[in-house]
Length: 335
View: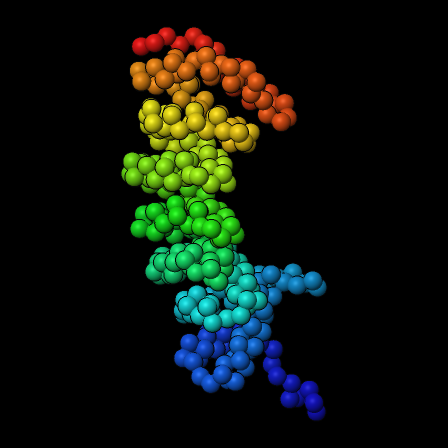
């Protein structure tokens, strides 16, 4: 007889609906004891959602269950409620929410990434995630969600073109190392994932973007900021999609001055990354006269620098690039 009264197992859609109802009631408030009770139930539900999407030690996730959960999740505003209510959840629940949201960005329903469709209609949610970097308690959770959302081109374009973009130059230099590193990871994702969108953004906003990039990042007083910035600059300029941006960058004397200063850094890793960008100035077959003048004026110093310039491990490509740079500088004639 006992088996007649067993409760039916919750379907993935049931889990989402219960989570949504609980989030609404959490948002409305209530007595402290009721609130603690709801919080425990919420943590349990989010763990169950996570288990459907990720599986557990005994079983892999089931595609049909993941599709049901994803469909229900984006049918109504569960994502919005989770993001808005995140500050009210405990630390473990916040971590689980971040993982659930991350996984949902990749789930396909009938061959469509429905998270992308949802976010395209709810771009204001990105504003909340971006403002998260201003809150020490929420920054890492909102930051990880934001990076997953940037997988969608429409989201990346929105963030790149928004007023929030300029804030990254400050977020990257926040005194909290973990938050600054997270912001740097998001910044890199924005500027490398969607090639055509990035090229369009950099072309349209070249002056404003690189003015900030040079002064706030490449010339930062913070060693880690400089190291990350010169590495990312190399990744951006050496990407084929950004060839027009690269050509423009290597024709400006102020940019060359910054690179030559970075070549003189005591840090070997910064020197090496700076070299990968510096070589683009030297390899440019249409160097403006002022670029040639700087290289000729500093020829002896540069050749002395490169004479002892080595990577920690012998790298054939690096040595070949260095040889070409040395040859080009040695044979330059003043314009």
